[in-house]
Image 1 (cartoon, helix red, strand yellow):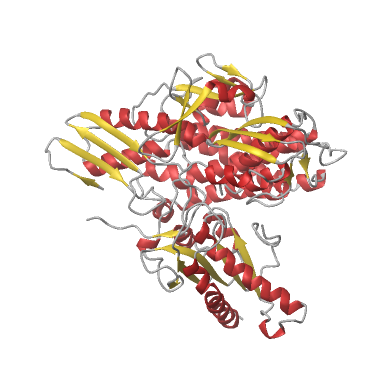
Image 2 (cartoon, one colour):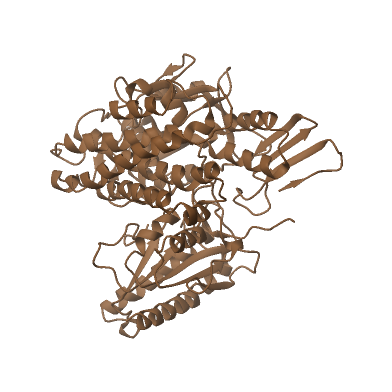
Amino acid sequence: MAEQAAGGAPARGAQPAVVVIGVGNALRQDDGAGLEVARRLRGRADAAETGVGAALAMPAELAVLEYEGEPLGLLELWEGARGAVLVDAIRSGAAPGTIHRVDASREPIPAPLRGSSSTHAVGVGDAIELARALGRLPARVVVYGVEGACFDAGSGLSGEVEGVVDSLAEAVLREARELAVVSR
Amino acid sequence: MSDGGEARRTRVIRTDYLARVEGEGAMYVRLDGREVAEVKLRIYEPPRFFEALLRGRAFTEAPDITARICGICPVAYQMSAVRAMEDACGVAIDAGPLRDLRRLLYCGEWIESHSLHVYMLHAPDFLGYAGAVEMARDHREIVEQGLRMKKAGNALMALVGGREVHPINVRVGGFYRAPTRAELRTLVDPLERARETALATVRWAATLEFPEVRRAPELLALSEPGLYPIDLGRIVSDRGLDIAPAEFDAHVVEEHVEHSNALHARIRERGTYLTGPLARYALASAQLRPLAREAAREAGLGPVCDNPFQSIVVRAVELVQACDEALALIDGYVEPDAPAVDVIPRRGVGHGATEAPRGLLYHRYEIDDEGTILDARIVPPTSQNQLAIEEDLRAVVEASVDLPDEQLSLRCEQTIRNHDPCISCATHFLKLTVDRG
């Protein structure tokens, strides 16, 4: 279990301009993809701090969080941020490893991606739409989804998803940087 | 949502949006004429993966590992795990500040989980919305209330548990760090507001319209003199069962059923039983704190609530209970001398049972002298309630047989939701639902 895994809301007043939130469950195979992306971005930030990877440094106005909780908790995680990039696993019937991007600030989460895999949780898409209805969505929200192959109990990602995690992390970081610049 | 089948007299009601895996029916009801011929639910995947994962791990790892079984009730898993491990090692934390802290943390989880269920999942059923999002457009204040209350629960879990999701401060023997009195005082304001909201929630829930359904499964809950059941106690039922958690295995059998991965639990030689808010309330309403008892009385609840649709009122009463008890625990809190007691492993078997928001959660572990886990068994509330939910479905469908398919299907979903089941709760990937036209 990653020591730095942030489950809780950051302290008020310290909220950076843009939060990158990897969502998922590490013990549900590909459902852990979002967490893995966040972990790799964090790894880069740590390397940058020690001078090893200065070129990979993330702007100070970015925070990267891993979130394994119930999706409505997202409303607290992004509270006060002007932008958010969410990364989650997705199951739409596309080829495993396919990367989807939805600009939630420009369009509603498509109906097929709403709803939940559980009767006692509101889904990630629903959490975004609920926040929108309540005026609690950051000005810019972009969702990245990677099509998963397997969501059964177990650890580790499928080969198809593992193969795209680095390029997904790249895309997420680029997006987050742009949002940070725009929101300055 | 439904297909008529070839035979004119056969109706099939099914829904698969509850399902974890696309295309697998979560609920299947077949009617022959007005008779319910078949009810099948596929609602829960038992934590067998976790039981296997636990074997060979250290006894101290069980609370952290099992916390990951559920994103909504990690504290329940931790609490049943620590109770079982302490039991195996001959330690009992049945009183004092460490027990109080555990109960306090557990109150946070009840507040968080019940707020989510009452406001975001159950309320839309009664107000006629497809979900919380649609409801929020017309009833913004109701949703905001629910979110505020949930946040108070989260704050409590974050402070005592170390983090609201998968709390990391819990350990076998107690906590890694005990909060100070001053820290706990910061929770008083939000909890007092949450308590007010909870009281309003009971009054509001009591005004909802409920289908006329009466159910009488055997009801099972923890029991401890003078306290509403949460974190420890004997296991009792309204039909005379009264056993220690160590006897659970001897009295409850789990059976494989063909249509579901889940094991269905039954009380040996008796059958179906129900755990959760309705059972706790029926068996322990006299132990509610006066404020919660009074709220229940004003809402018109008798000593037993036998209409599962009214479980929303009972959950609201438990919200009052959890807020009020949390405030009392904070008020009376004495910082412990040490955040944990020593627990020295020894060969043996330990049992732990606690009340997750949705019902009794039982853990049993066998460990060796070094504390290595040799065997683990976890019986979550949903696999215990599955038969009772199927029987509810059968009764509800028989009573609602004249409803058109779509309404009948919705009524069935509500019937399942009444018991807040854990439906493969640990995944939350975005899911594409296919419209079958």
